[in-house]
Image 1: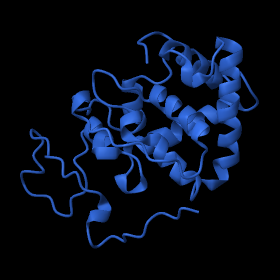
Image 2 (image 1 turned 180 degrees about the vertical axis):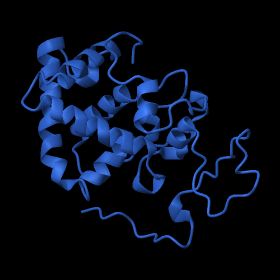
Image 3 (image 1 turned 120 degrees about the vertical axis):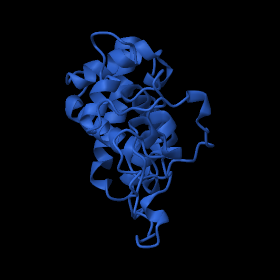
Image 4 (image 1 turned 135 degrees about the vertical axis):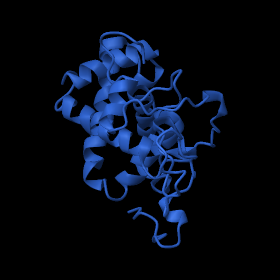
Amino acid sequence: MDHSDDILVTRRELLKRVGVAGAAAAVPIDAIAQATREPFETLTAAEGATLEAIVARLIPTDASGPGAAEAHAARYIDRALGGFLAPFLVAYRGGLSGIESYARTAKGAPFTQLPAQDQDAVLTDVESNKGFPAAGLFFNVVLSHTIQGTFCDPFYGGNANFVGWDLIGYPGIRLTATANDQRMDVSPAPTHMSAYDFSMFSRKKPDAR
């Protein structure tokens, strides 16, 4: 996302929203393993492509580290729309279609084919409740779910390769804390373990349908 006055969500604002402002750790973007794209479980391929483009602009990849694209936030949302976020599925279908239609009207091309600057302009309008009915509400819903998908436990399909946790300096679950872990002048080494890697937590997969 361009560093201009009409930025949707700056990296600093994002970290404040998740309660860890100033804790970001620099992660080389080229060090992030890119997994093969998995087919969407709930959304159509076209809807999924639009969603991927949107989340990539809401939490963008930049010099400080990876963003929602690398975290597979869209995959998290898609899976959740077939389960505990199912009540939002109709809103997503309408909202994604609305963004594509507005992009064609306002910028002359589908949202997925627009340059980043034009995508940001479309999303800024949508955030301001322009383009289609309840556009602003849909923007806030997608932003909330994008944050979830970027920083959730990887068990749920987002935060791939722990990029979200690394970004904010969260070291992961610990069942015990050593004296060294509690030192204020030392950052704990990341465990890169899901909570569900521990036997005390249930390994039951989230309901897919």
